[in-house]
Image: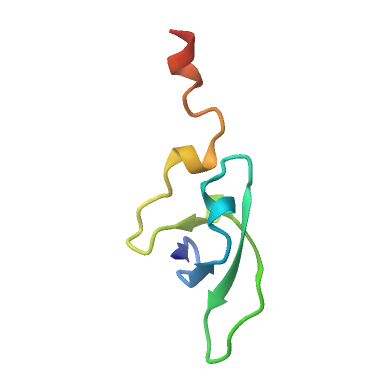
Length: 73
């Protein structure tokens, strides 16, 4: 799966989907797709990533408390 860095616009290949969908993990392990050579894996903050279309990541992937308000009702 590929995501895009919001500021730079570079594509990032996500190497661990479990990190991506787990809201307790603030970073993912990925690899930049930039330049001619394959880049080394590195950590990327999920808050700095979006889908290639520009759409933000789902809140349930970022915020462990995304449904707390519903539980209080």
